[in-house]
Length: 264
Image 1 (cartoon, one colour):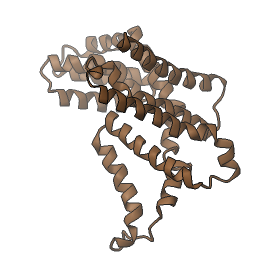
Image 2: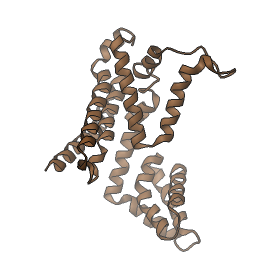
Image 3: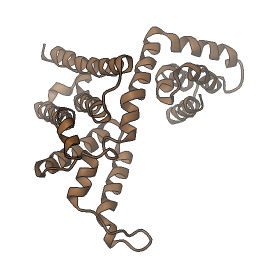
């Protein structure tokens, strides 16, 4: 019973994220800080409770408690920007002392969510960039700079328009979420499989047919999706298993689909 309830709550959060994206696309977007922070708050809640979808998530009470605390904390820390945007704008985003601590917490949670969903490479890159801001005075020329204080770095990351809530998050909140939703709809409706069937019929008899089918299928999907993410989501679920069944190594199959979807 508890597992079913938790899954339903997780699904409701996912629906809220999709509904928010569709609503703003149809009615009009909110101001950038509100649009982006709302999107990220819901995404963090989903990321930290992603384990609900696995059958063994409830086997460890400590894990459940930790994930729920992280999800609620992430939602609250990022949602603070949404609820206080007018006040922040009135004082020109100048940070108060307690907001520095909120910013530290939000940054740590964003990095942890990235690690869970994407892995260590992006986390290492982010930590290296933050470390460079601190280490500037101690580096040799031409890499050195005057360095920045903790308060300035955190304010930039948490309250500024170029940190956590910068352009990449803006693209995700306004375009990527919609396109991924569209791709999921195509996958669920079977449209992606139809395109792959057409591609397989065109290339199936030639050498390297499954890989060529992935390229053709991704090209067809690219004419209506416009993004590599939705392309992989729709055609990759068919092309990657097809390539693996015919002898392609998993990493090679995934790489072919990724490049084909990017090209598409």
